[in-house]
Amino acid sequence: MKKTLRTLSLVAMSALFALTGCKTTGDSSSSSSGLEFFQLKETDIGTKTKPEATKLAAYTSDKPLKLGLVTDSGTLNDHSFNESCWNGINEFATENGTGKLNATKNMVDNGNIQTYYVQPSEGHYDTAGRKAAIDTVVEWGANVIALPGYLFESVLARITEDKTGKYDNVYFLALDCNKLDDDNNYAQFEFTSNMTSIIYREEQAGFLAGYAAVKDGYRKLGFLGGMAVPAVVRYGSGYCQGADAAAKELGLSAGAVEINHYYAGQFAATPAATNYCTSWYGNGTEVIFGCGGAVYQSIIAALASNPDKKWIGVDVNQHADTTLKDYERADCITSAMKNLKATTKILLASYVDNGGKWNTTLAKNVVTVGAESENCVLPTPDTTGDADCWGFKNFTVAQYNQVLGKLKAGTIAVNSNSDDAALAANNYGCDDLVKVNHINA
Image (cartoon, one colour):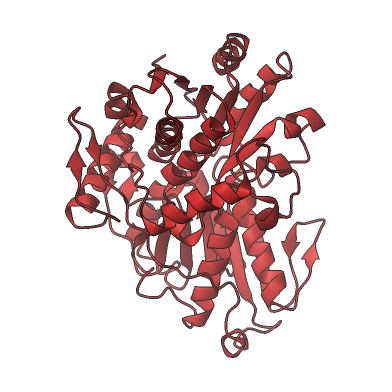
């Protein structure tokens, strides 16, 4: 029930965005099937990751810029959200500061830009535990604290209520957070001027993955989501929409593409999810998109008995994950990415350039980024330095760049709707060329 309420609250907010003009093309509309179509509007946050030298001069080894991070319920080596954001913070510090990374601590503990992170203690993965971890970073003297993941929404609500003044000079960079108090029936609240949050058009990255898979020749696809929260829903919906668009361009017949679609119910591998993936592969599914933290481990487990099958990663370039076995990496044909590392560096540069605070575009706001700023993309050898991350045989990088260009220009429209019940009832917005088998278990 909790995740359903949260999804409905965000659907309502998305509808409000559409009604107030926050869309990229056209008006919010409903198809003949009743599925509402709208697009979240991207905010221009720029691409600059190096602040002005005169602004950086305000920070010295004696009075450094202190950048902190608190993990949600994962760790820094989650090969996903936490790790990508932390890598962005450390890279910003070493690329723009005088300090060096302490490899043992995985922190920059010297120079004019320093970094520090805290993971909530075991058994305290709740609002109180996360807030206590934030307080530890505040006591360290953080100027900016990154909070990756929607689980920090209620923490931000509690901070807005604090009257002690201890957070007044600390700036919060949230990722994937909306102004919803999850602990109080998802009541909306307002950010203070020292808060900002970035959300992503995951449906665009999902679209690119589904489009590429069908263009490459795959016809039996799978989608394994963690939980039906809006970010995961949009990834999966975009995946289906991309497959549908490719099927139309190829002139495929009705039902030519099939997509099995299932949520594990948590951001981790589960026995049920592993069984589904194993069964799907055994019954002809060729590639599965794993979306939602460690849920992809269910796909990895299924690959052990299906070595000729493929999978698609999420959030980061999962092909580059050196903890995977060689065949597991080789079977990862692409990843639907959110460029968290780049986003983090861009916002930190903006903070410095604006004199140590969020500018008017960011302060108090939730802003959206996507393909237009290359924050929702697929990895290529040129953009990642990973020569083997492109696992497609027929669909080329040049063809991908053409499609990405159309997304940037707005000539390809991808539905941002994250109402999973409505999407499931309407074949995730696909025509009859694609049959989505949504498993409601």
